Image (tube, rainbow, N blue to C red; front, side, top):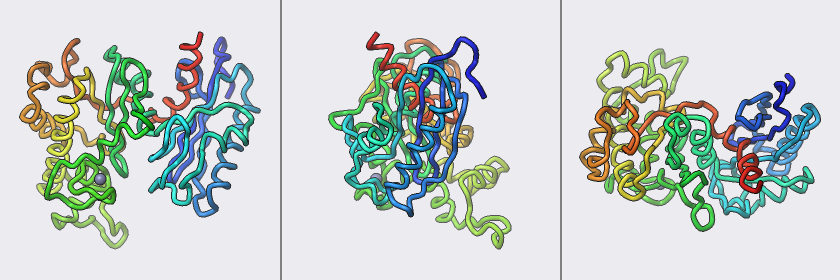
Length: 332
Ligand SMILES: [Zn+2]
């Protein structure tokens, strides 16, 4: 694949996950022109993973002509920013204390920008997805995956907080008597709205996977299929997901008063199943929302508070690639 004519400025985005490593060449307009998928070889240690990343980046640089604007990397947290140092990341065992940014820069002999993966998902949606569609200057995005990520874009810029710890709303406790969370708190949003939580909630209700000899575990998407078919226990699971999201959003809306809150990640595909309870809980829990909610939550009205599903499936990767593009534009 070559570059489309007239688009000779491009950048590289990297999504470092605990299972998969994705590296994309992206035009300055956000079109992916080449993507590499590798396993994250955690068992071989951080040096091997860093070498794999640097090797894939070099492969794209050698293959594509034109002006490389920069390299953006999304990493799981906790990561100290803008330094780029990982602190006991639960999804990257063995990476504690590693300076991801410096290690990559040393291998590539080029500058690298590092951000929290959930922040880059929000940034990608802001630039190319729901944010662009609605023409807003700020948004918050919750990503429902293995955990619940949270990214915040304020007036066009990623909000990191003091050292990169902003956007830990997945670990905001919402049920005081809820289940303990690995973070040390109890009843966190992540324990009720992630794909992992959906499976646990279904198991707590005694649901079993159909054909359980071949598929001993229920999956979040399988539970969503059952709910769509009318399974009462599966419907209760998504009702609880909706309640958890509504409670969390009530705090977020009251604190931030943003025009748009985006729900993304794999489990967000179950939007029709959890959205009714999410909106009713948000209405009950936030007077700020009640004062500024649109007449129809599915119809965008400027100046109102909106909660909408994500529009992109790979916003984190695109957001990573567009980081250096935005940096160039603001420096110009
Ligand atoms: Zn937690």
